[in-house]
Image (cartoon, rainbow, N blue to C red):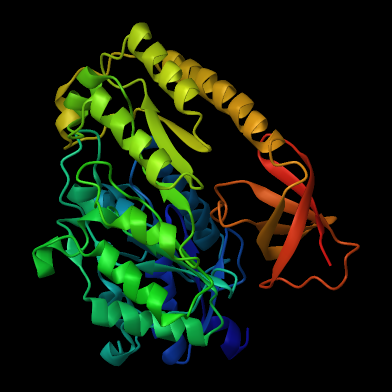
Length: 435
């Protein structure tokens, strides 16, 4: 075994893009220390493996545990030397996991990069804070503008895991954005648990619009995309800015979670059903070209069939462009945990399936209207017989893709092209370059 192999550290990231940013920051520290690093998806030749876990809902926790057990066995079989676990699941259940999985060498929470480097025997360099080794394709990157959350949604464990909302300064974010642009990043995706809360803790007012304005003014990025906008207290000045700036994607990512007023009140979402509809109407009026991506929870405690049907009718009425659905997960420590989790799992799954059947049909109908239209697309990568690209209306990995035949040899990942849509499916568009 050569020195390169023994010094090889691989990070495996599970969960959301916020975890991705955390892993990328740790990779930068380990790189600077002279270690051979990689960011892998589940298979690795590294002798040291760091698993960055998710602990948000039941399915995510199960995936994290299965991954830890996979590499615990690899360690027992002598395929790896060290197994380190970090992130949300470790933060939330560290003591229980340490007792159940003794094969892991160390357990760290969500904000312990210095402790991890120390465990690995290398120095943590504070001057590298804000620098990352990108695990995404080099033409897009996530910018995490805040940590934690001050909302009190009854079903959500994030505040228990990551604590209160803590905004980063505009100056530090602009500096990191400039570094990302210097690496060739053309699409910047702003993320946090709640973008709309940005700035309230340090500037005493909502500052998301000002941050986006400064990023837009910088001219560093062709596309600026906003993820995770909270519906309550939606900033009035954000939509006009999105409308007037070509480099801000007409993309609204806003998790509504439900529409029935009783359930919204129990969820502690801060909106009623009529107020939710008024917000959607405002989006359509002020930014008619925007797509709306949202998510819903089905099977929340006490959800009746009529309340679920109200949600289905709401989706049909508003014809959302992008929809995700989650089945309710009964999480310890949340306010909803005091309720009875009385919807059987098979009913939760059945409702999730019915909702997605409705959305698949809506998505097909919406996509069919795009046939013959031309769009500017950003090419992400090649896969099989196609180049995989996206319009400004689609975020990586979760939304529609534009598939272009690989016979067009001049196409390169990370470049923009004009494409005509020839045919469509529920979640895919097939296009031809316009040259």
